[in-house]
Amino acid sequence: MQQNKPNYLGPFITLVFLFFVVGFLTTANTQFQAPLKETFLANAGRFKNTFATLITFSWFLAYPLAGPVGSRWVNRHGYKGTLLRGIIVMLAGLLLFFASSWYTVRFPGSAWNVGGAVIPVGFIIFLLGSFIVGASATILQVVINPYLSACDVKGTQAVQRMAIGGTANSVGTTVAPYFVTGVVFGGLAMEQISISQLQVPFLALTGVMLVVLLVLSRLRLPDIEGTRSDSEEKLEKSVWSFSHLTLGVIAIFFYVGVEVCIGANINMYAIDKGLAAPALLATLYWGGMLIGRAVGSSLRKISPRTQLTVTTVAAAVLVILAIIFDNPWVLAAVGLCHSIMWGCIFTLSIAKLGKYTSAASGVFMIGVVGGAILPLLQGGIADLTGGWRLSWLLVLLGEILMFLYARVGSRVRQSAE
Image (cartoon, rainbow, N blue to C red; front, side, top):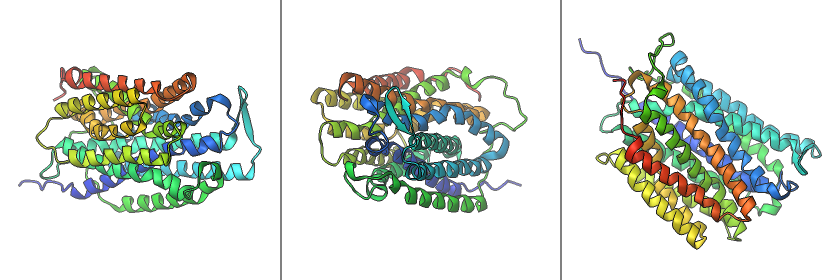
């Protein structure tokens, strides 16, 4: 008697929603850089940009540490058990965001002196919150990425399902800048914002995620055969022995790094140039990613390798034009190109890995640390060169290296199947 095939449509929709949450919180976190630079870092001296980018650095620093943990949890507790644990970690991080504001209001004089820069303790608490919520986003993605890629939803292929998830992620990243400027800080000018305004929005977000946790605990999330090892099964070889995965981790390091460089730092670039409504640039960038992913979700017949080749070339051309004309608006258009790169790189990286897939997803998350390192390095370059213009050469380097992965590094030389 033939067994009925599991229906993955419900779980697919659930994980697409969680991808929205990950995108929303990731971008909301980066959008605090400019406002907190004006509040927490008013006395941080000439390295304000560098200290501000520590917010993004703390978030993405969690990825190489939490990725392997998430992978172990998937093998031990399954996909659903790992999602529940990831959301509990997220709740702890959101409460730390609330605590950073509460502590600063309660103890306004509490600060550390770092090389002449006065850094409030509340800012350190915020950085810890960024790290914890970043860790939760990592754990969720260790589940979301392989599950979307492997779950068999009728009429779709893996890269298409990843693009649909990426579209939801982009909806979150698009609305997040205005959540920060419009909801958290009430549309006030930079010099008028107050750190006390953080408290109510983060308590509200904590309440929403608590409801999500309760709902998810009651949903059925069927396992997917052949995508993870049993908790007691020892894998015969290291996932690092697959060159297309190893090089994929390097490619995703630069992808996330350059994506976040633009998404997080374009606001400060616009502010330095005296442009009005800097949040609009970030919204246009993330909105471009939303449009690109919506289009990408319909590209059933174009291979991930071809998609990655075309988008990296187009992105490199736009970055070169932005540097030549010193124009942030051109950089905002790069979002259209970045939109489908994540799904392409992930799909190429886990190709033909079989039972190594969940372990590969964990180590793949290590590459996301590029979102911590490259924006921080870019902030340092901007401080040292007296502006953001030359710092975008770092983004150009990333586009070139991803192009090389598409053409050469992504070819499968060793298969687990």
